[in-house]
Length: 164
Ligand SMILES: [Zn+2]
Ligand SMILES: [Zn+2]
Image (cartoon, rainbow, N blue to C red; front, top):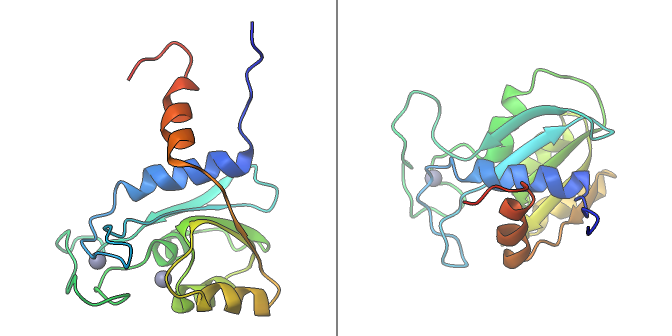
């Protein structure tokens, strides 16, 4: 029997961030022509626990829609990183963030002020300034390579015996 090739913790948390992005109700179309649904997972420094999760959307209790879906970066939705950080009850240092899209400059500053050591991302945001800000203060940034096929194929086949 073929030995199960288990995924890394980094890939596991990024997949969770992808699943979280499906909860987003933001309508804004990004520069790539796709709706910007962003998911975010915050873990502790050794990747053993999830400390918070988030996705982009309007504030809790307000209508599930953007204020203005045509304003790039300013549609009125809270960003996934803002939501995850504001819900995070842990103040430990060296937290790690997994976000489907690299942070905008404003979220990067929020990350800087909230005790992070590393940020993993899947897609690079149209404005790379956020990543530059993180690097300037010594926060590591790292893309995670996940092809569409590897996500879709392995997301389901990894659960042995379960057919979607
Ligand atoms: Zn929005
Ligand atoms: Zn942001």
